[in-house]
Image (cartoon, rainbow, N blue to C red; front, side, top):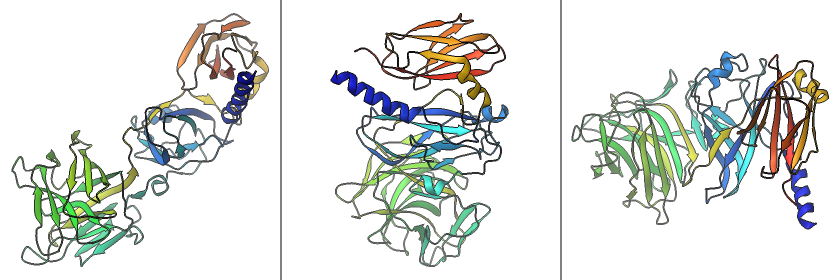
Length: 430
């Protein structure tokens, strides 16, 4: 009896979390399953990544070309911050969504809504990541960036951050600009950067601003475009010291934009620990850990620097996001018409019945719509298809005895391709 009561309590929670519908005015939604069952860390205000084919939705007239009508909501219908890497016309559009919390070893479901031609853009990098700047407003944000020492150029222009130091080879060297916020990690520092022999990116100490590391080129030791020096500096007068002439040792073509990702943290000894340096454009990556023992620090800033007024470091974007040892997996469910918006879904409630619901060993499904049904399908909570019946007869008996307890979706498609859906709760065995 206690088991039955506990299950009914779980079912009532599940119904409350999954049966409610959000955002009237949006025609469609999909459930997104976020699986952290393999993760040993709680995900607190964590940014997830997935890559849907938004171009297909645009071509079907279901999504604005700029993705302005995308919305993501949690189980209480509260909107979640998100950011798109490109326009919705991309078939591989990377989308980032910040979720408030997901425990280690657990999973959850959020929703994405779309199909509102009147919606205004809501993509917001600053709300989605720990730090974000894409330099599109043409003004240096002094709450995000600061210069250390003088500079010849420190401006936003044509969607880029442009930095160049003062001085020449015989004068002050490697002054720099850095993020105002500092980080302890582990984080991914991601950017699109154009640097060269005399310009660079790196990290500086929050404790001693001049203590910093840079990633540089060894002037053709491996190849002209191989970034292969990890240098440390503690002044603005010298070239610094090449502490490692074999890291990261990947191709980062000079003086052109490269999409880079660096995984970095302060370890328990207060030293910088770098566990990944990747060029996302060519797929080259170094995941050998490098620990910088020359400096001890509480936190670090992302920074960029140059040798002289003629050497420019350019950034197209910078974002900092939390990193974990095992990233959660993300899967996108099937498209469902929003019952708060779609007339066909509201009409479907009179045509389409499932009983009993919740079900245990079997469920009777009956459909009496204006058009004959041509297909019956059942999906699990992840959107995986588990049953298809072509040209079904009615009533249809579903054997649910082998279904794990949970939430399922029954969908009927008629001869005019109208789709009618019902949620089904499977209670499992006593």
